[in-house]
Length: 69
Image (tube, rainbow, N blue to C red):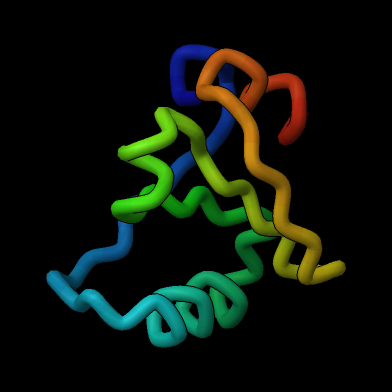
């Protein structure tokens, strides 16, 4: 993502609580979050969540850049 000119940030703590991570991103005004959990690893996909609309999309890493630009 950074190589495509998209600003990125990794959650700064080792928390496994997704709700805490989503609140952090929302508070910082981050429009999208990428979720990679056990299901995504198994299916080799990424879940992209739009924090404004709350819409979630499963996609491949290759399609991720086009979805957030």
